[in-house]
Image 1: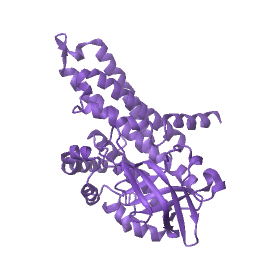
Image 2 (image 1 turned 180 degrees about the vertical axis):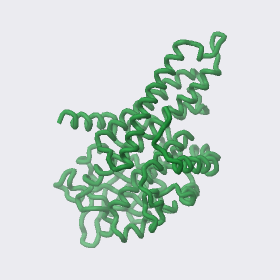
Image 3 (image 1 turned 90 degrees about the vertical axis):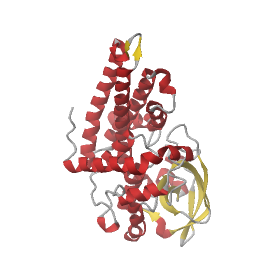
Image 4 (image 1 turned 60 degrees about the horizontal axis):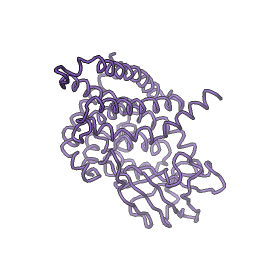
Length: 380
């Protein structure tokens, strides 16, 4: 089915993204995978190309357009290229809304120009060794010391944790407040007591640095409180819909791409004297996956349109996230199987799609959490 959600300017932007990938990302990606981290030069190149800060007002160096369809194009093309390591989606889709929606005028002038030109890389630190989706379990805490906060604690599984120059940290500021006693504090590179642990060794997305972060008596200026004091829970809930939609967009794009690769493979690969595509079982497998992808794509495009109009709610974002990422996982597994032994070889794109995509059903809220959100809404 022909997609109808994009205008000519979105397709022009798609061509720009593909050109950027071909010039600034793909020639270096294998080395980034070996290094476990991407080059900061690539971030600056992305800034020069206008791939950062779409929704940031022009006065701060951004694109001045909150149209999420540009974000969707970027996510689709990076996914199809098999290059999740340069985490522009995390920067634009997840962290960007916190800065544009919550920052004071002084904070915007201090942080947003670097956010848009690629000299200031961002991260958000929620997950802790003993607390993932359960915000009430967060132990990282900040004590009010008059003109500053004294921050102590640790975080783990933080995407862009090594490269990040600015980290939005979820910390407990009112101990007795539970989930409603949390605030967002912005920790900047070079602050005394802020340390990074090891670059974690993951099974996939190896070019994307993921780290442990430690805070020992870090003095965070009162001017670095982002949003309302004790308002982190509401702020987080407000921005989660876009985060989950962004992950879902990558999920369906990944499923479609690995299916395309596999469709071509089974046409060429022979078994028992004829192409695999000549076997009924193979045709049925392809037919099932193609249908699932088409149905999912239709729903995701509707979600993208709704979000571009400011109408996407948390429930439908959760539906999109769990369904698209579980489909991605299922399609990658089935396509690897159809590749046989070659699918298990790291140099084949299907193998990387299998390992890179496995995190999709976990971060941004696990499938189980998504179902819980949906179930509560349906059952009341």
